[in-house]
Image (cartoon, rainbow, N blue to C red; front, side, top):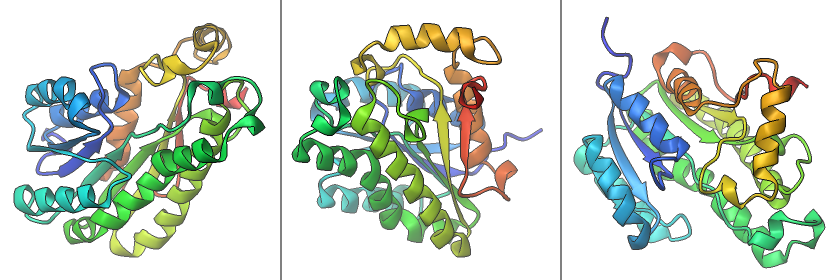
Length: 258
C-alpha cells in the first residue's frame, strides 16, 4: 500500500526542538512520503532546529518571523523554487507573545501591548501565512492546512489567560478561512490536543498538576500522546479527510466532554 502523503509537498511552521508537537507531526508526514519545507523563528532558534530538519531530509529551511512581512516573501520564493509553486499542506504550530505574568493571576490584568502581541503571533500569523500561500495551495488542488489550539479556547482554564483568548480567535479565524478558501479546494482545520509538556507549555503555572488531573479525568485515563496528535494531523492533511473542513478535532483522550 503506498504511503498516503506520497508526492505531497508542504511546510511545517513552529518546530523549536525535538519535543515540539510540530516536530512529531513532521516526522509522521515524512514517514508517509511527504516532502517538507520548514521555517524557524530567528537565527538563535535555527541552531537547534536546523540539526533536526536535516534528520528529516529537509527540502528547504528559511527564517520566518511572523511579524516581518519581508520573511513571507522569502518563504514564497522557496515554495516557488523547491515546490514549483504548488503547496499541498501547511502545519501552523506557532504561538507566543504573553509575558510570564500574563499567565498568572487575573486575565484582565494583561497589558494592551502583550494582548496585541499575543494576538498577532498566536492568531493573526495563521491568517497571514494562509494569505501568503493560498495561491500555491489553490494550484496544488485538494490542499489542507491545520493549526494547533487547546481547550482553553473554549473554557476558562486557570493560568492560560490571554493565550486562551488568542486560541479562541485562532479557531474562529480557521472557520472563516475554511469558508473563504473551500471554493479553491483548500481545507482548513484545527487540532486541539490535551496538555503536552513542551517548552511553551512549561511556562503555564501549575502545568504539572494539570497533567496529573487530566490523566485521572480523561475517559481514556491517559495523557495525550504526541504520536496520537501526529496521527490526527496526518488524517486532516491527507486525502482521507477530503470532506472535512472548518472543524476542531480534539485529541485529548475525551477530556473535553467532561
